[in-house]
Length: 141
Image (cartoon, rainbow, N blue to C red; front, side, top):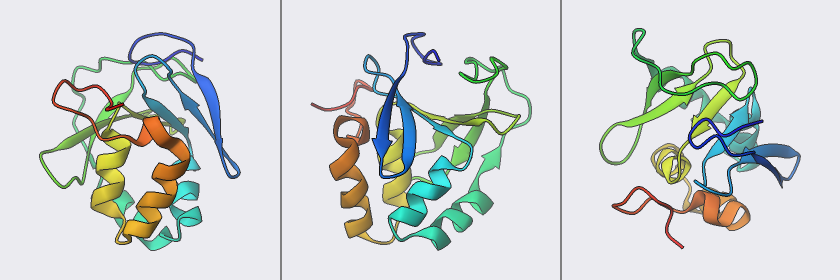
């Protein structure tokens, strides 16, 4: 599979029983269908995921800029809750998954998880891929 952002091959990172596809170049993450929900459940925050699903705001057909690594159809933007500013993610309209640019997963989990412990558990495993984005939009090292 190729990264929707920089078109480099994605590598697999295993988090417990979840296989995430990650880009070693731009530090983005692809969650196949159900993997984000599984991560929330493993972090003990299944209810927070259900709330998140209700809060995702799909845009009317905007100019899509990326393609799904699974089906190659254009990803559609969705607005997600975030502590600051709008967080715009890219989701496959055929429910194959969702793309997180560097720092976006951290922003989403920080806004969605009520437990700092749950956030630290996920951050501890995913490391660089969970780093908040700096002002240049790249993951902090």
